[in-house]
Image 1 (tube, rainbow, N blue to C red):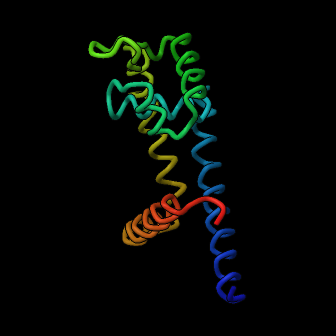
Image 2: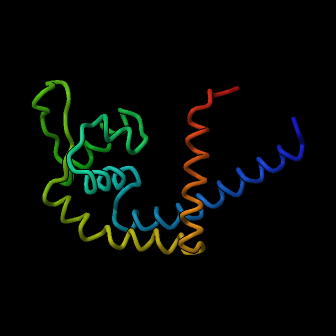
Length: 150
């Protein structure tokens, strides 16, 4: 293996990890100030923007295990923010949707959250953010398609 290439790859990984952690501190801080966990907020956010979804779709969109989605949805249901609905075409499937209280909560907090994200990403210009999006999407797509451990 080429040592220069290895050093460049490791440097990119460290820089990418540190950037992610720095931005995540801002977004997670905003979420926790609102009394939510990152997982709970992720479910509320996806339902707010996409509408009712099958629990499996929620799982794929927020990248947690099926047990994790069940646990998080149970907590949100207990707090009156989400409700489960039967799927009319599949008795085994359930939809998750925001309640009126959940919609009201997201309508009130999402603009502030978007501002926290905007502030955390303010170190890049609009064109740099667009370029970073393209490059990171490419990086993620290729990495996702590679076999693990080879």
